[in-house]
Image (tube, rainbow, N blue to C red; front, side, top):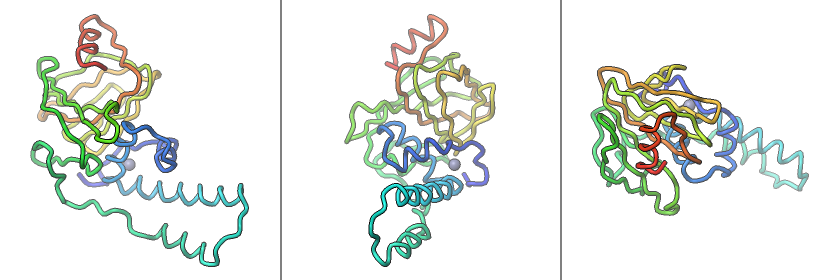
Length: 220
Ligand SMILES: [Zn+2]
């Protein structure tokens, strides 16, 4: 994917929380997966970090090293991690055109498990935080997820294909944050399956008994 094709980005609040190291493992991982491929968000992070640094100086006046300004400017101008085409090792293959985010390097991914017709999921095991709830969803073309809302925050990064959730279309590279205000039913577009990386905090709240059973089956 190219940065130009990315339509949906995280808000400044999430980027700030990421920059400040305030996000739990699961959402931080999904958000990092977006930022590493998104020049727009990398630039936004730099602006926020610079603004945050300035704010900090105002709040806590302290003698600065003579070269503090030069060092800060150098840090801001330093090239960001270049999205390299280096594949992440040790993870299962993805469809042509898709690649694993480098943020997942070192993670282990379980095999794809059946969830419902046309739907599979896998868990992402994060070595330093085994309790982190990170999932991969793999949904066949034309299928839809049960309508649901969220008891807490759900972050999604599209790795492959695209879906429409009644609000907007989300394609590879796009990011989505849903919370209790969002009541949606993602439908995968025809022509290609869709693979998403998602972090789930709290539980999904499904509307129907089938979906509720599904939710408890998957443990989300
Ligand atoms: Zn972005």
